[in-house]
Image (cartoon, rainbow, N blue to C red; front, top):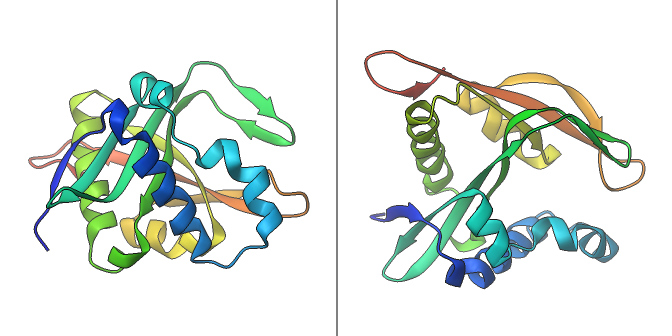
Length: 170
């Protein structure tokens, strides 16, 4: 599939939010989880303006996106410890296009972007259903962290970017 990757614009916020919720719903989580995740999954114009948000599109349709945020100080979000540094906060693909390599292409783009900006490490809180994706990328599994959902954990990964002839994931 041919598509382009570009920086998200403020006008993309509702499309990206729709993709966030649709992609998360693939896993058939209980409906009450989406109320808890509402703020996490909603991509506002301010979020786009303040973070690195890039999307893949083809023929005017948004296929998926990723976002990288910089956390300037360690902090606790409830029971979740968030380390200072750069985080891959979101990567979501419209369910219609899952399995077509879009996520892998977006991560290759993120790798190049990170190297250009001298970001050599991204932290990731991974939905348990996405662990295989990060394993295939060569991410390092760090451990488990409490989730925003009581009694549930998410996996913590690190993506390390190495400077060689061609930017790539490790």
